[in-house]
Length: 333
Image 1 (spheres, rainbow, N blue to C red):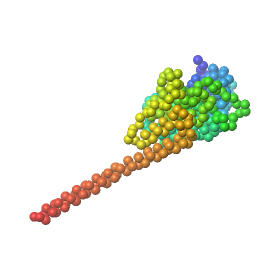
Image 2: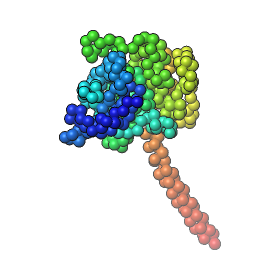
Image 3: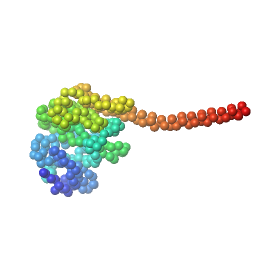
Image 4: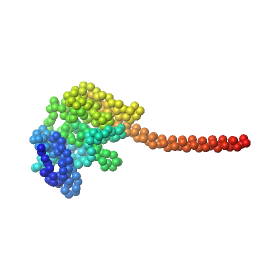
């Protein structure tokens, strides 16, 4: 097994590597510190098997090129892309301290307000990606980080890993002679999260495939499992491309819960034409639900005061009636 422990303390440009913070199928991520100003950064490197694959190296370059296009609060920021004699090609990115969404959802479900906030931030990030002509194609809880320290006290939602990202045909190619890296017969992405059309042809997907994936993530946050959750990959794929996702229940007495269920259901429809067309459209519906939540909370906050005022009025009426009765009784004597 390849170990990068010997690289602890190694220098890459102005940075010093500190420790390995994660490792996936194709790459490892290190944290590092700027030697002069103390700024922290993350360093993504390819594992040896991936580094030996021209296709994986091309994808790594493609990821850097896509990230260089994007400036979004909700997408991991790229700092630099360098070639190191020891580590090879290195993607230098902002270091995101927080909790993976997958870890949170493994432990608990989310209530409606938290799910709405999650969805709105995911959609803001995807909107910024789509504005640059980029489709993520691998949105899933394991590629989303929840970070604390936001000015408003809320957790910042950050999308990362554009390794399977693709430019729309209408977008300007990042370099001349760029070629398709995905054969039409290859299924890319996490089967439980990707859109049905991505199973059939990963090269033909549009922005609606990312919106489908966000719908799946929100479904998982609310219900605790994916819309299609068969453990057999062949069965799972067949179900996803042949029928609508099973409906899930919402509290019939809660307007927001019903609205959120409808938003999720629309996002994960089988036919792309039946889904949201843009991230902005889905974001508008979630924003409306958040406003409904705020109005409901405001009404509930004022209700006890009104009830207290009514109780006091009732007490004074009782006292007044009692006094009147006493006076009347004395007058009859």
